[in-house]
Image (cartoon, rainbow, N blue to C red; front, side):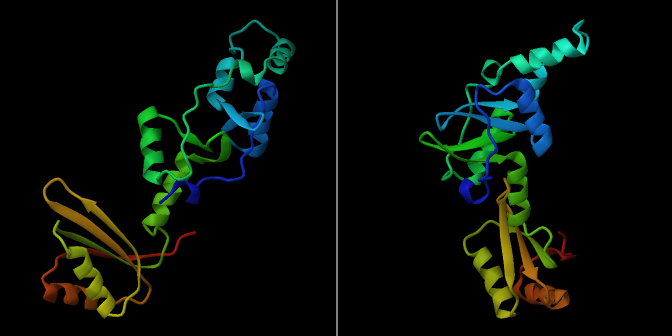
Length: 217
């Protein structure tokens, strides 16, 4: 799965000359928490709610509301923005994006190739992709197998399901350290749970769990 398939393409951004007050107002208006900073069609920085909070006067300050507003309307984003921005290519994998976010403890990656900004991807986008890949919200049956990690086991399971005439929506494999693996298969509506249990029992493959799943929006 590539970043380009899950990134946000319509990016709201600001310039380095935007004031801190204007950036904060834009975030509130659009319901967003980060803004790329662009200059001459190039990504030059990133501003977040956190950086704006750090740039704002403390509640313990002796400044008046008028003085605080004056300060925020005078301070430019270029003076508070993050300049060393970690980015990712649209052709990188979603797993790369997740690894970078975890490693650097960040929740957003501008998607950049060359000097051009193509979009952004956030930790929420990665979570949505995970839900999609795992077929969360699909009605049908979910089969869970805990089997030996050996060549051909997935092909055997899939073949048995296909021969039974059931439609597979997604498959997920998770290798374990003990030489086994977890295989989860989501089937579309119409699959017969009892028939599947008998099918795999006769094939000598342990079906460790079978659950009916409900449609979710």
